[in-house]
Length: 114
Image (tube, rainbow, N blue to C red; front, side, top):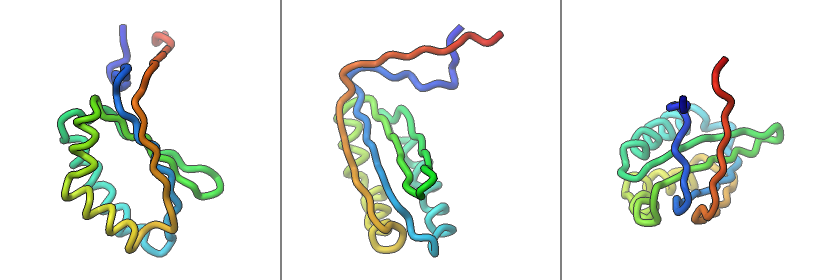
């Protein structure tokens, strides 16, 4: 029985790796905007998955997956997303990097529940 809580990853999907460091004095405003933008992203056609991880040194890494290059471009160019990006540069981030690539191989494994 497959775990339905896991996203369905497949070849051809587009994955964005967003690495960032945030300012510490704007956390509440950042969290409000990030929550709104995540809800908006999840409602975008072709959205597959979003997950963020934090390292001990304060760097954060977000992995965002869209089903196709077209879906990814639509999100990249979305006016609300663009406005949030600008606000991030103006108010929230000390720095960030973005890497985007198409997935050419997928392997997944999960233990069946006992």
